[in-house]
Image (cartoon, rainbow, N blue to C red; front, top):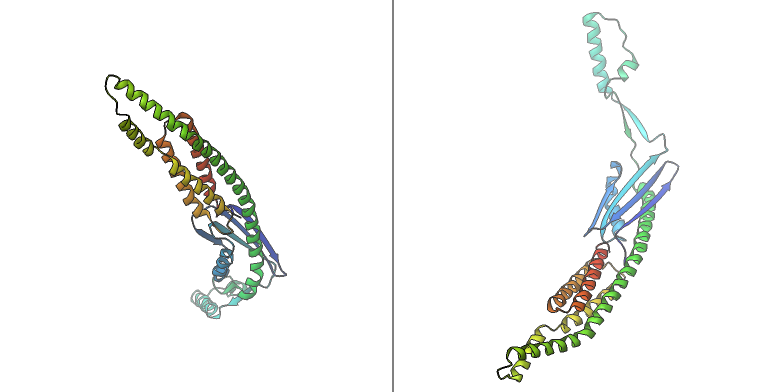
Length: 292
């Protein structure tokens, strides 16, 4: 079954130390374009995330948002920079001795100076983080794919309906064309007879010229090819794989055949039927732009 490229998915996981929320949004795109926004500390996991997503999603622009909440109060460690503290203390002593200032050097004073005490995030076990993080990632992917599949069912039904509409109009054109040819033949003979009523008419020559003109105006081949493209399109919809690009090519060919039929006929009813066909083909093309 075909899939849409539009969808949303969400996944969560929670432990004693932290929780992760993963959200994914996808829209149509010519290729598979994945953008991941997450805490920088986990950038080393980006390639694993991409591989995980590409297992299920083959086309579309996918935006991934990863949010982390920390419950562990011991995830930050403080570091005392002794050399910088010594430098600050030495400078303060020099000021005191030079200006005979009051000695009010204290721990609280020195600790407030820049870089004397620094904090940094404790290093996490990245394998353990991935073990936790891939749970909401897979949950979000599955949720996203489910929505894309539901949207795909709607696209499938709509495209099939329009294919049937194209087929109905094409059958009417096919039934009407012999009548158009016969009427055209009679009109040509009548017109030529009026023009040459005082002269001898070579009926064989007229018949040959009419046959040549009718042959050039024949739409039999276009009808056969357009019918073939309709079958190809409906069969392609049943394939269990990404078929968006293939469908796009088939629809281009359908549109080309419809244009050729329109250029070869002047019959008003046939022209109206072709316009209906072209309208349905355009609607199909619009729907296909969102198929994976």
